[in-house]
Image (cartoon, rainbow, N blue to C red; front, side, top):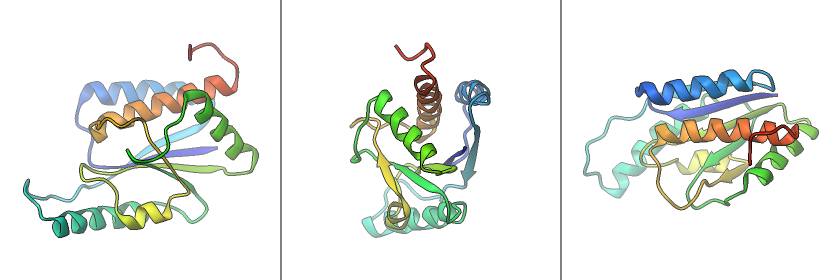
Length: 159
């Protein structure tokens, strides 16, 4: 299985980079995982609704250019279905059983994801109703992917 975390913006915080590197290293025993960044669209603080949509569309084009046709795509969205770690592990396992060898998790920028990216998505996932910085979501996501593989293998960690 080949897993990609596709995200808008460059990760600058060293503590987040170290955490992601640690879980990526741990995941090497189970799967191939990579983190791919696309540039965020520079925009002023006070945007109109139309300007926000333009920013999301530009970032969305960059994201879609990195998604192969054969990939199974999860988008991260607050309004999506929440899962337990166990159900998330079961979902990943089912994808593997059904021959889905390329999984991409898409994390949008500070304004979220464009409609086109959401339409390309096979499934949306929520990590709760709270808003997290998209940079922090990378670390949370990679930890949950690691946890899922530990659960699938009945290995200690997730309790």
